[in-house]
Figure (cartoon, rainbow, N blue to C red):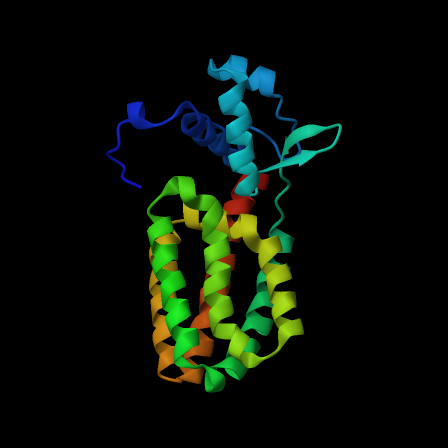
Length: 223
């Protein structure tokens, strides 16, 4: 995500994505406000095609939702929801990891490292944002699956689905990528060394620090 990339190298869709993302996050486009493609195309002086593509990308980021007979609207964001979801994650995922670490085998760790390499590569490409949460979930799943708690893991996946848009916002706009990348590497090291206490503490801090950054971001938008 080079800051020196000239804007002429960006597609019309990417420019529209950046403009609409900033409008939504700044509150210029209010939560729940309809996003009419024809009006946006006129405002941004583009055809409806890049607007449609941009709205689909923003849907993948959790900032836009499409509803039947209503079209696209800006997604409602909630500080209370962030708190509840991430506190649940901290409770459940740390317990799951504690149960998993004694059973981790080389194949689990190698797969986790492979996914982590892919995630770090995706972090460098802003147009790969839709894959960030999926790869993040895959990485953690590689570590958790050794707990042999399939129902608990299903609950975790459900929580991650609900956290998805918030995680992407944190990574994109709250400077979360460097810390997330380092936390993941450290977590993998602790798991490889069977250092359960350090792994659990790091995972808890990883989740709750993200929640704090996201709450600040969401609070700015809903003020």
